[in-house]
Image 1 (cartoon, rainbow, N blue to C red):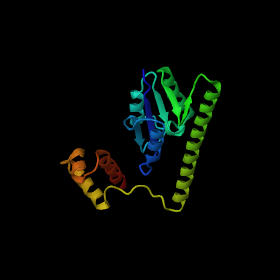
Image 2: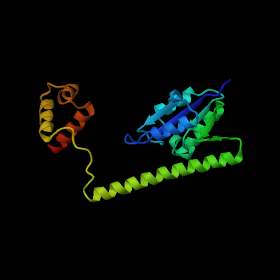
Image 3: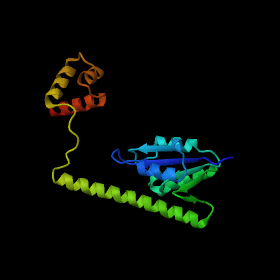
Image 4: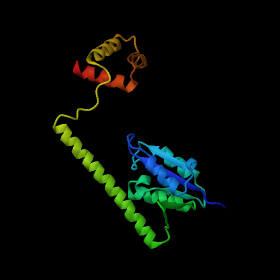
Length: 193
């Protein structure tokens, strides 16, 4: 039975590039067609289609390869759960060039330390983001999203809705917005009236 190497790469924002991670996986002998990716999804979000595809592609005897542990998970429990899932199916986990051996006490400790640092880094990023947003809000620079409809459109949508001739779906189509946006607009104009 020949070993297949399955690679996984992830970046948290759409502005980030996966090129460096792809190159690292290729250098680790992962074939291009066996690299699965998630773009714009955080490591704390377990609902990642690329990760699900990669985990579904591995078979007993294969090696699951990630360039760094923080690309796989941003919390110790999540990293541990993924590693345990791979171990149960007889799949080796390679973090960079090192293969994680869950039976080796030193390897297990090293894995847990890496996972702890990944979680710590994610916590620091969240804390700095919240602090930055609080400062921006205090300076009046963080005002939230622009409304989808102008004040004039709000009034017209309310007027049309009050006639009873238009359904929520009709209004959503006419104003090129989603149904939830129509409901929010109606709630705002109702409370403003």
